[in-house]
Image (cartoon, rainbow, N blue to C red; front, side, top):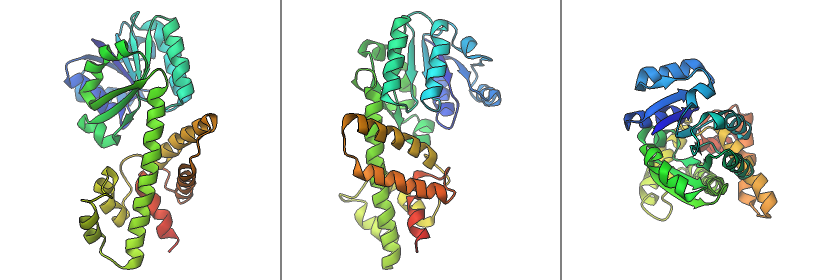
Amino acid sequence: MKVAFVGLGVMGFPMAGHLARAGHEVSVYNRSPAKALRWVETYGGRAGLTLNETVHACDLVALCVGNDDDVRSVVFDILDSMNYGGIVVDHTTISAKVAREMADLAEASGRVFLDAPVSGGQAGAENGQLTIMVGGDEAALAKAEPVIGAYAKAIKRIGGPGHGQLAKMANQICIAGVVQGLAEAVHFCDRAGVDPQAVFDAISKGAAQSWQMDNRWATMVQGKFDFGFAVDWMRKDLGLVLDEAVTKGATLEMTRLVDGYYAEVQALGGNRWDTSSLVARLSKKD
């Protein structure tokens, strides 16, 4: 399958690399051409000078860009350049509303749009171990799955257009609560004068265990926040969650509270810190 990948950030760069390693003919595009050229130097393939050139005659185009407006702009640009019947797989976290709009637009042009946000962070992208939540046509996903499986450990269709994004919102709600709980536990250990490593050894094998605990407890204790998913990105995602909650009449008290805590982290200069930096606002209060 002739494949294009648009957006070579910390996630897209290795994701596109897995496609090349899997043997697909891959063209890449990035707003910063130097990054696309660096990708070609690393993985081979081809860097397009324009979006239309990059996706010309492609059967599948994967996107990993920034926000609603970026996705709208790219999809409007590329549909007519793709093969008829081609599939756009959008890995960007965007609103369910825009995902549905893009699905309608693609259908009208004889193409298919799948909203397919991912979970697993930079490490998951680099290791090809992402979880992908998909909204859209089941038959199109069946065609796309052998391709996007190059960077996934799990791919699950949730429902129709927009449902992948709704699942990602549920994912972010869960993460926000877990990380805040970890931050408070680490802060409590510090104030109580107990050995945080001993506490981790005791509770990480029980009901409190989570991926966040296994991967972020030690770095939270050390005050290291220079990796993973940035606070700015989490606030963007939580903004989508809270907007959707209003339209659905959902009460998300904890999520709204944690979003406010992340605003405090931003005020500390932590815009690009990892989301585990919630503990920093508690340390600041000491």
